[in-house]
Image (cartoon, rainbow over all chains, first blue to last red; front, top):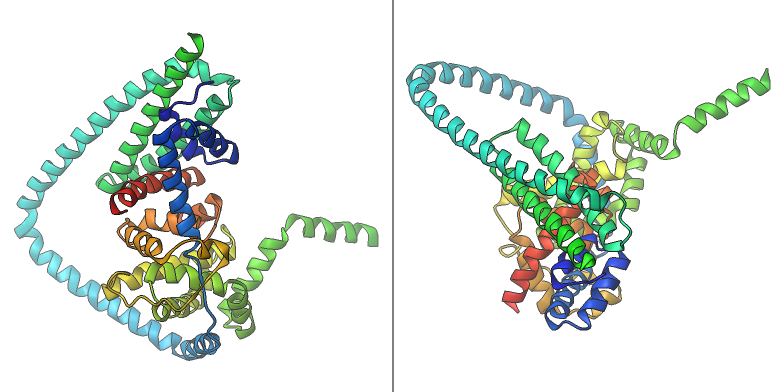
Length: 208
Length: 195
C-alpha cells in the first residue's frame, strides 16, 4: 500500500492511533507532510493547554443564593411573560393585518424570485449528487470487502460522510433557505468526491 | 412466591439502567429546587463547566456568570428533561447555549473582553506551550462560526468524545468528526499564515 501526500488528509480525518502512526511514517520521508503534521499536532497541543481551572469558594454560595431568589419569583415572573406574549401577539396581529395588503404584491414577487433561486440550487445539487453516485458505483465493488487498512479507513470515512450528508439533507428539508447548511453540505459532497477518487486511484496503483 | 416477586424486582431493576435512574433523580431534585442536588451537580461538573465557559467568554467573571445562569436555567427547565441524553450532556448543552447567548447579548467577543490570565493552566501540556501560541489560537477560535467553535472547543480543549459532543450539539457523531476535521484544516491554514 502506498501512502501519498494526498492520503494524509484521510489519515488526519480518521485520526485513530494507527492512522496517525501511518501519517508519521510517511512524514519521515516527506518534508511538506512533516510540516503539515507538525502544525496539526501543534494546534492540538496548544488547544489541550487551554483547559483552565481556578478556585472560587464564593461561586457556589452565589449560585445557591440566586437559586433561592429564583424560586419565589417564579410564578409572578411566568405571569409577566405570559402577559407580555399576549400583548405582543395582539399587537403583532394588528400590525400584520394592516401591513398585509400593502406588502402582498411585493412579497409575491420576492417569493417567486427566492423559489426560483432555490430551485436552481436544488437542480445543481441533484446533478452533482448524480455525478458522485456514478463515481460511487465505480468504487463500490472495491470497498465491499477491503483488505488494505487504507481501504477500510476510506470505507469508514465514506460511511461517516454519508451519515453527515443525510443529517444535512434532513436539515435542508426543514429549511430550504439555510445557506450555512447548504455550504456545509457542498463541502461534504466535495470531500466524498475526493475520497472516492482516492479509492479509484489507490486501486489503480495497486493493480499496476 | 417470595422468589417470584424477588425475580420480578430484579428484572425491573435490570430494565432500568443505573445512569437513567441517577439522571432522573438529579432532574427531579432540580425541578423541586433541592439545594443538595444542585450542590452535587456543582461539585461534579462545576470545574468542567467553568473551563468550557472560560473558553467561550475569555474571562473568569463572565465564565462564572454563565455557570450561574446555567444553574438557574437547569432549575427552570428540569421538568422538561426527557432522559434522551444524559443529565450531564443536557446540562452542558444548556451551558453552551448560555455562553452563546451571553456573547450575543453583550456584543463582546473574547478579543474585546478583558482577558484574565490568572487561572491556573492544567497539566504538563500547558507548561510546554507558550502564551503567544495560546493567544493566537484563542483569536482564531473566536473567529469560527458557532458550531465549529463548539466542536473544536469540546473535543480538543475539553477532551470530550464525538458521541458526547453529538449529544450536546444535537448532531450525529459522524458529523462532529467531520466538523472537527474541517475546522482543524481551516485553523491550520490561518495558523500557518499567522506564524
